[in-house]
Length: 441
Ligand code: MAN
Image 1: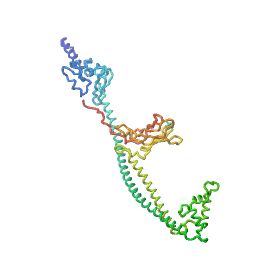
Image 2 (image 1 turned 60 degrees about the horizontal axis):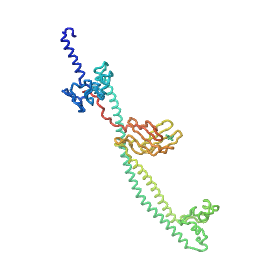
Image 3 (image 1 turned 135 degrees about the vertical axis):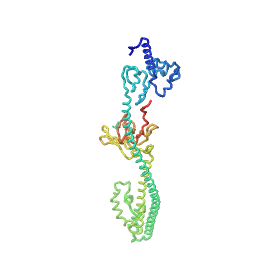
Image 4 (image 1 turned 180 degrees about the vertical axis):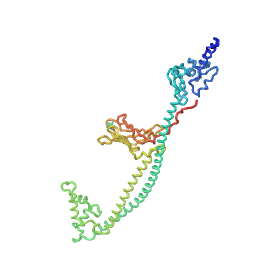
């Protein structure tokens, strides 16, 4: 190349080459686009932390002048300096300046090894392509999970509406039963009063009617015996009444058995008044019917009351910001770990069944327990069965994003304190925007 040149010319060419190498090594490397403005070629350079002003030719001169290392972005001179890998086509990042020209390729664009012997290849394009494919795959999977989440949200909305309508219906039924109860209570009291009054009247009439020896009402007559036995004067004799009259309580030996009392009661009386008098009979059966009607409606009211209570309790639970976890209610998930079968019934309870079949409570639904920014990522189940020589059993359920809804793991990190992982699309969140793979400087 230099064969035709004179010695003078050669000196000039060598000087130009050396100068260009020197200028090239000073080229401002290892800084991001946003920092470029600090390195505009001027007479002087102000350290980025503002601590010192130095002549510009001291930038990247392999001597650390600035405390923040900002004068040596392209050399390893400053201990805390950092070198920016632009990595066009892939992910930009900083590396410690000490890794610049150390013979190891750190930046995929090979920019950190600009003066080393190591032949670094620019692999950014490949890496970028691979990562983009991975991200696309993940995005597709997440998209599918979010679609499933949307389905369970819609299911939750429908269930919620159904439950609200059910509650309104039950409330109506309950109001109706309440009105019926008021009427039936009055009816039952009236019928009972009527029957009692008829019986009283009949008894009074018989008492005064005849005291003659032939009268059935003389003291030793069956009617008198009947009245004597009918201590509550309800017109019929119970086994208890006969036992109370005919066998002194303190004399256990002579106490009447139930059968004896029934026989003696029958022998001594002509039958209840209702057996004799059709009016009383009709009044008593009307009173009995009213009592039976009342009981039937009371039972129905009790059932509806319990249903309303259960439904209200269910509707008072927090099922997530979009009720995305409502679909989990009334479902249970099992997992066998070693000798135990664990069962999680969300919003209800957690149990552990041993090989012998014994079922132990690991906690009842308590509350959401995630951090304030995402409370719905953990569930707490508390106040389970007390542990022998240990605490009460409690379970923390961690909700993780996944395509299927299933119990994935159960651990007991400390005695009687359990941690489960429940996977479900309901807990998937849209991804935060990916840190950009950039294709431009
Ligand atoms: C049972 C199980 C265990 C627990 C012990 C504590 O064996 O409930 O999970 O650790 O009791 O005694």
